[in-house]
Length: 532
Image (tube, rainbow, N blue to C red; front, side, top):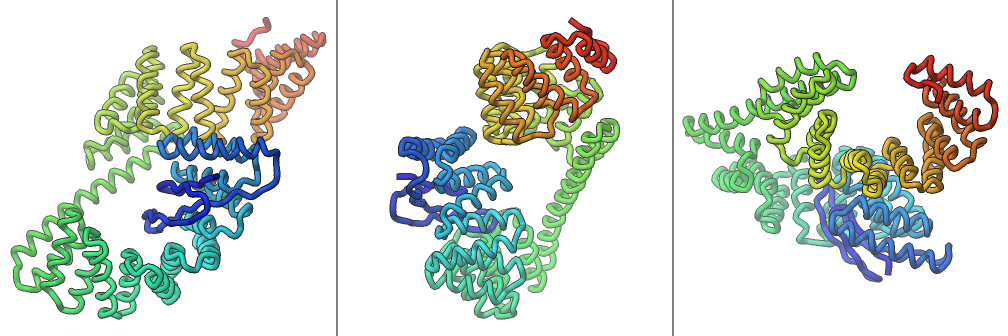
């Protein structure tokens, strides 16, 4: 039977539904299977789609998300009415942070199976993560209507109401969740927080006590119980809970502050001062880190505008606040690369990697600089490391593909470009280089299909049209090639390459005069392009 997978873990069941709880940015996600709708394409295509879906689930369980996404997309193409594949595609895209694409896929799944409460729930949670609270409420209310006995749907709807400031509505949903599942710790805690904000301290204490009983190792539950006990004047009990919160979470600044206030009010001034000094130290460090991050972001903007000297000024200040900031060294490397000082670029990128060995962007930057320095194999090694630490980063696969292509391994390069496109479908450079690699492999028809597909998705991209023309010219379809080059020039009239390629096509058509004019225009734009 078809199966489905969820946002943080996977469920694969046939006809019955259970639920699995995941904390997801304060929200809880329920994943459940759906039964595929009947009819539509041929039986063979349906069976293949189901098999691809199952293969995708297996790959996702192994965190091979790019390959899983490709399986789910192929399943959806074969059987467009198969909701499981769309749902699983959405969940996997959400897992790798492609939230907008995930929402689109969840919406497709919901359209195919509008009576699925769990699918509406997942779409609602995705809207919430995307800060679309209205969209989240609409979907979560639909989930509750379809699955009135699902505590997770009620809890998440309550959390969204709370974020909207609708406390009474939030209270009602939390209470429904607890009524359905009395041992639902997070619902008790959120209910307690809302009650405390309403001044209902006694009721809040009861809810926090339930949360602590259910989840004794939850530092936040302990902290909230401590605050509520403090408000009731139960100082010793409050201290006990705050101490336990700090044991579970030693850098819990709010717990330490409230503990210091209790101690000071008891007359233990020296101990309270010591606690406050520790808090001040944490706050000072966090303040310096915040300053460093602000300057680092400013430097990144300068680099986008190709202002490396301004970026280096900001980064020097950032490193004064936080001397072991890997992001600052990474950006210093990029700044020196823009200044064409490859030795300094390499040194700073290596420092970034030393500080944070699993920093994929720094590994990619280091690989790129090593490549520019001529150390091809060392560059490929860095790209390999980037893929190993960030298998869901399209840029890592793309750069490894470029290196493999240059080193003559076209088959591996094509696989990397495909992976990059699975992770990031709008990655134009990966799509173009896949087409060019296919041409290098003498798979011209496949290259033409690749460029034609891109031309539909990116009709205003002159580079796609130019490369489509090259592939058509390689196949011998001269008239179509000339048309593609002309379309490229309509989009970018000053493209020397498109003028040059159009000249080649015109000469093959026997129009020597027009070809000469295009060769001249190409050479005017780029003197290195002389007629063959």
